[in-house]
Length: 102
Image 1: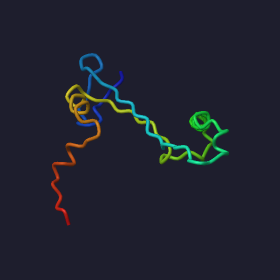
Image 2: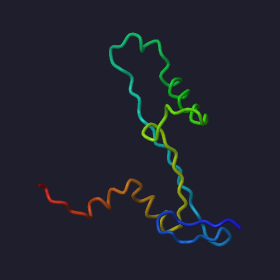
Image 3: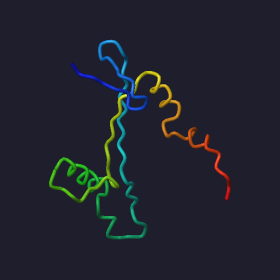
Image 4: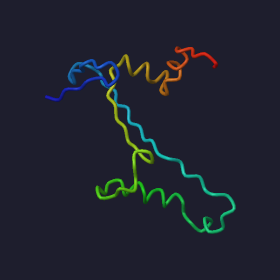
């Protein structure tokens, strides 16, 4: 039997009784085209990025690190899902700390 746990509150989720939400995130470095570069006009930047992402499946590729591309997956209970959808970037939590302006 598969067991799931909410990745935020760590509540055990029964797959037969509890509703479970899956959050998938893809984080990658943005590559902006260089201005006034005649050589870059002939290049297909989107194809180059696609080629790099396809190399992720290759275990021998050390060119791509976590700082360039990452896929994340989280399981959430219904309560944590509601909190996540209201504030997916956690901006409200940062306001609670009320740091001084030193």
